[in-house]
Image (cartoon, rainbow, N blue to C red):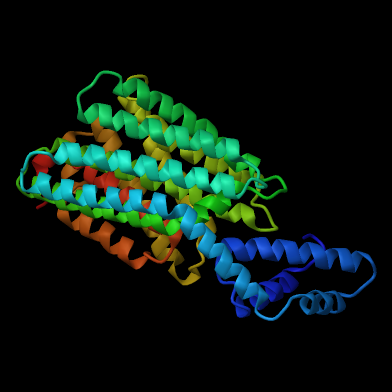
Length: 395
């Protein structure tokens, strides 16, 4: 699509939108198809306007809207199974949280059932996506990433059941996800029709719905433990899952930027690769010392914050954006220095308290419409609750 200008591409997109093709992944496909046809006509000597008129005359009335309706009907039929598994995971997660809060037996089993349901939803949704889009490239990357996610879920299941092998499973998950995610940021720089951005965009709303439901459930469980000053094993596992899911989704959102005709810079891809490595490696508790893991996590916040700043569209909120990124980096730096005994543990009282938590939650609400920053802040709040020394209390 290099022959056509941004204005011409936008004109085609607006035309498709007016004709009823509002589903963005399908709209992108149609835009690519129509643009290629127009470029061929331009190459034969026609002007853009003449080529555009010839293409639109070939389309029967309401044909574009019919294509969308038929496509959506097919997609919905194929994905109904994965949706039911996702709904089941939501129900089990909510029920397990209520049981844990009320101290009823069975909360751990419900949580494991939720993991199984979400794993089945991911496998079925990915399988249907690959079958329906055989022409798209990068299916091997999807398989690698899905394998890493399933290994992560398995490691948490083993941990809840106190079975041996949880650390080994998590190590395999981290290595698999580091390699596959890092590779994706360079692989997608090539020209082609890729599966990962299309499929992730298709499920973005469902993924974020799951993440926020998970965060809401763990928030309800975690806050009483801080108010009453007691440690809660289940809430910490849920927080780790929330952090991991939100972090992977944060980096997967970057795939969408590779769908444009102007690919992100090489520096941007390198930054994403370093960010995902700094994010995942601290999970290797059996191989990396505490200072190294703390240092990697501290490095993640400014690097990921720079990605947020690059992708942010809210120019009038830039000051608040940089202040929030700076505050989050500072809190995690002080916490890391205290955990490494460089600073006295008493300084945690300045970093961890109800006021700072309320500020972080307020910033999350303010930037709730910014996809990148929303996930970045959700990771920050979840990590803050995970690191919060329970003996300090909230006030």
